[in-house]
Length: 256
Ligand code: NDP
Ligand code: 8X3
Image 1 (cartoon, rainbow, N blue to C red):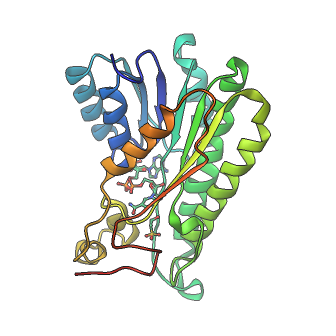
Image 2 (cartoon, protein in one colour; image 1 turned 60 degrees about the horizontal axis):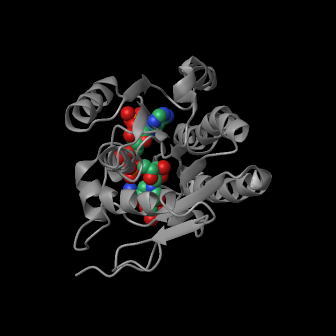
């Protein structure tokens, strides 16, 4: 029997990287899954994989977390049983662009702020009341080590992850009397589509980020998430910070 048997989890940004790995890990442990993301084809492929390989139920929604009304509509449309969400993984997010503030593309800022901060809030605002009603649930926010420090050209991305860090702590205080868990997972370098997105599809630049270092994998993060959601009822993991062995901070990295 899986560790998450009879649990229901909603994962944002399930189409790639960390969200995808969390989805598969949760399915392996028997969780029923609500998977969301913008790329319909990838969602459908994932849904098929889950149904064919695991005995779990799956609902998938093409969802851009920046679209507040759509977020409200999706959560409101869930059948009653599916509204009993035990775990919300607020994972959808991105870095877009890598330049100094006075040279940045403002559209990149909007995209990061709207996704990483406002999107996370929109989803939480719809799901958390369902958890509060049941006095049961666990929110996992995927933050970053960039939420605790800043680096050259990281400015707005770091600011959004700093906001995620603040929100994790704030939400935990807000619902302290509601028996709901809130955790933040803050990774360093994880090899996913992250750098391709950050560098607007520049493959060579993206590859360099993971050159001569063994980065974390999305599965490493899913493993940390699974650890958080399988602790005894009285234990809340507030934060897990994890980096590759060769990374001590966003800037101290030893490459072979
Ligand atoms: P990926 O680019 O591989 O995955 C990002 C996921 O987020 C995709 O599934 C994407 O799906 C989804 N997403 C992006 N924008 C939106 C949106 N507006 N609405 C809905 N879904 C969206 O990167 P990672 O897996 O690495 O990133 C996941 C999280 O981990 C992010 O929050 C990131 O900041 C964080 N993180 C990543 C680190 C890394 O080094 N990789 C380190 C620390 C934190 P789709 O395009 O289909 O919508
Ligand atoms: C991603 C890690 O160091 O690129 O959040 O900001 S870093």
